[in-house]
Image (cartoon, rainbow, N blue to C red; front, top):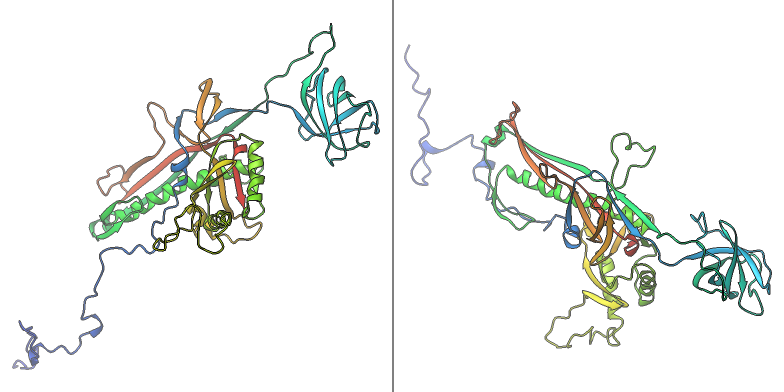
Length: 463
């Protein structure tokens, strides 16, 4: 049988030049794939710096700890004041017996011979008196200095504080003594973990991409790009956990397995100052904050970490103090040069204390707190006032007074184990030979907690 001349036929022969011939014509070519796509090897950073970690680096220190419980003692008030005292005595009485009804008070710290100032809470009258007797744990009897006696009506709620003492000649001294009032605070570190894994087969097929990372590094990465982002994400979680963490309450679903820890927001919300009336937009509103700070630690310098809307409100408030601010001809201490780009922002101001303002990216990020709606009860936080400097506390572990930043981090560490930030590789790929798993796993671990000293000096601004 003879061979058929048409089968298999003449093979297609590509030509060296772009010449259309019958020997190089393709009939079944997919024209959609004839051109390679033009690609950019550099990754486009459409979200800019995606990390939200910056707050703790700016305001805190990191201190090692060997225990799973950190305890410290904070000073109590030096002077004594009761704000809910009532008496059954009538107007013009020369003496009166008061009952203390303040929440949490179980015994009076008043003593016979002390002089007290008494003010009716509704501003209906006031007196000065000397304590003559202590009939009970929560009662005290005073004799008024005024000839007209008691100036306010029966059963009026009064505020009472000590301003001195007085004794007659030849009498015995003060009876009893007062112990220092202290508050014992504590917090526990929590263990945080994360992991990145890539199988051995994917590691054999390398693909490169040029990137610029959030920490400023730039260059080419392959599969480690995902590992790099896992590390950045873990770094962010270290900070956001320090802010958002709460202790596991009794009878909660989590308490059976974990204990939680006291984050900054939790501590300030429970023991600090909370502004919950929208952003303070006027000097009068800021004056109420200054008055509150006067009654607390009176820290000279404070930092305001705020979201964008709060930052603009502060700028507008400060600009309004300039008589030409509304007309736009002058702003703050600027020179009003026609060639100068007008700076409409302020970095700080002084109103009783120094306040330094800075934007807080965490509160602006739409994937975090910034995504919450501006509605009462939504959980939105507009900013936080953080006192600058250090404070002296009694460290129960050291057994002595120690200076600590108001906000700092304690991490577990000893001479043989440092759990500040651990990372290690396991598996059987990428140079690791620890198991028969055909992958490389990068593990991360830290054990830490945040100590918020003197939460009464912080102010949390809620919506």
